[in-house]
Image: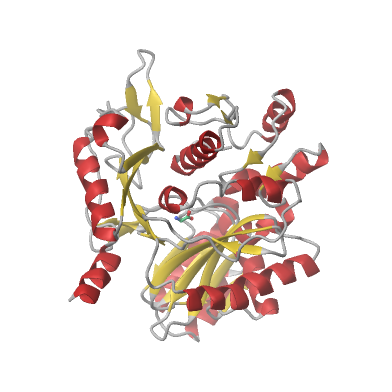
Length: 431
Ligand code: GLY
């Protein structure tokens, strides 16, 4: 369920595993996009139309539902599918609160003693202002509710933080999502996205990825949903992942179970690695990341999607602790002119055939559509995710950048420096 680059990548992974195992797979995407249409039957159902999605699962006798976006999970899609005994990979609404309420996530982390920045939650602007007065700059003001990636604002000064807090709480900036806010100390470091599959108790950590949230090269310009990602990340050593398992995933899952909100699905921990290597949790997401998924899934060993089916069927026994990356992937997002504020729509896309781009490139569709004549056009902020594969980060980055240069549409906006930190580390290591 869903219709972006993440969901195209999930379809690609499910189809790859079915082909490798030579078993038949009939795949549906709701609503999907022109990319998933090449692998699946697209059903014209929005990912938020819960009743219609449940009806489609029944009507098509779907064996396994994998939910991409957070909104249907927060709205209880998994609960509804459990109620009709359908197998679903994704948390219940109660468990998805780890993403849909930042205030709740902070409370869970506090109870589970998970390392995270000091914070307080507010619904009143005067109380928020008083708290801000006593904190050190910079500060982060977060809408507690779902805000499509626009809910966290880094504020250089206390005055700015007070303004942002007041505007969010008034409901004018982000509607109901901002009526409750979390004010958090700013944490310095390097971000890391660690995704783990879980049945609420056992944990299988996927190779971590690093997202690039800023629009411009060198991490400049406005925040976006993500302009690119790469996987694996050399900072994510086995020792670090063991620590993240022990200090983050296991205590949070225990706390969720203790609260009667067993967490099943993929849990995404957005970490900040501080200068001394200590991981600090910035946020949890209740789903696969986008664009991280487009970089992580292509490096996983064939057959890994069996874990999704086993978790959904509640017969997951003895999973490995982690999956190792089989190669390196660098994913570059091609965005529309005007992204993230007002992306242009409808520009014609010239996309070379997959064979012409070569077997080291996978193009995942995100914001694309086909016009009545069948021509591909832009239909969203992030248009395509272009994953380059290689034996190392330099080869993967070059494959991605070469393919990006060959794809054309008016207003094409992209960063040529995805994975720059890892490339710099690799060069320093070789010198
Ligand atoms: N790439 C960030 C996210 O999926 O929320």
